Amino acid sequence: MTSEQDTGARLRSLYAADGGARSVFTEKTADYAASRPDYPAALFETLSIVCAPVEGVTVADVGAGTGLLTQGLLKHGYRVVAVEPNLEMRRMADSLLGKLDGYRSVEGCAEAMPFDTASVHLITAAQAFHWFEVEKARGEFLRVLSAQGHVALIWNDRILDDPLHVALDEVFSEFGGAKRGALLAHEDRSNVPRFFGSARPKQFTWPHAHYLDEAGLLSLVFSRSYMPGRNSRDGRAVASRVREVFSRFAADGSVKVGYRSVAIVGRPT
Image (cartoon, rainbow, N blue to C red; front, side):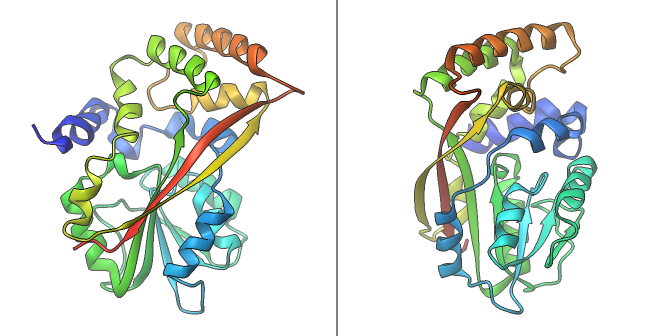
């Protein structure tokens, strides 16, 4: 069994009945926007070395969601097209970023983007690679990339032995069900070499964190694709457990949620 069959394909099959990546986050959009972390300044400094934010440069942020990475790219001077298959997520990004210079959004996905051939200078994908059909995505990325274009696959990885994450994992394990494979697929990098082929991309890592109040921590938990809805019986049980976790770890009204930001940058072959 290939790693694609073991993680990515299995993940997509779990959500196929729910509409897959185009629909799975529809009910999660507000929680996602309220709680997911941004990205460290060092990431954008690294990207500027690979592809400077000069006039005429276009970035495609694939799987842009509510625009967390897109916003950082815009603030650092890039012209960005947010590519997002989910209508509600795209609408949220438009409402948050629509007035910023250099922003626009399109419906699309890693395997089918509405761009001309060789028209994009940098493709970013943050927290999204585990949804890709690797071979199709690589072909489409190479189609739309300019001759010197690059790809940056980006993650905010949880610090798995951090006590807060350990406590949250207990909640995810109890209530996530079979679809908790989404979390495991997200943290699996075995398909990255397949995506880049014979190329040897560079990997960068940085410490990162953000702070959430109780409402924010609840949103973080409920933003997970595999967690039950807030108003369900299980959702109410989850909320009670998360409040207990918050009270255990909070200081001055918030908890520190630690991450390790990772970027793998190169050009697939």
